[in-house]
Image (tube, rainbow, N blue to C red; front, top):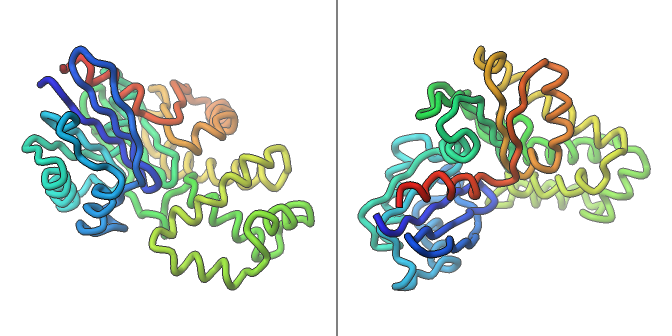
Length: 282
């Protein structure tokens, strides 16, 4: 196997890496892919617009890891789209949790958590995902994620919970026309991305007690509904990846101390570790 194309896809962005034996890895990005929010035609159109296929970049195989790619029917759909787009016969489609596990744990056991636009977690035994929490998506789940925090920001503004400083900061960024903001949310084809777009405000206003409350409450919800549900959490390290995990790593560290759990590693993206994992297969 001389060339492998790796893809790690969330709902907001997809990281790609072309691994060729004897050459440096080639990295690129496209918009995110989520088969629960996009149909086959929409995904194919995005790939055509953002990822033109050049003869020199056609891989021997593709290993795709993505949000919403755990269900067999979604895997088949994504596999078909990728085969059609690249003209490749060997395509593997797996959940993004497995990419995170390969990247963060390698061949070691651990509790693996993704905190990005959405959230997910699993117990990884060093080879396979042995247990995972059910995903209820951005409407009923995704605790600790970007869209969860974004929902809380919008609620604080709409319900008049923000003080004058935070209210003014919100309106400076997003305007003061609440009906228009709500309309944008419910008319946006990717409402989870729209909600997550409020998170940079939290990143930029760290230290304000209301901001810290939102971050801590949302991440504590993730620990309560995900991390603490695994009996292995008390004996194995916890690993986190994703933009939310990266930007609010100090809060994650504090919660691990509070619950007396061992923190393994926090990364912004699993791609670097994923490349290292697959390099040995070339």
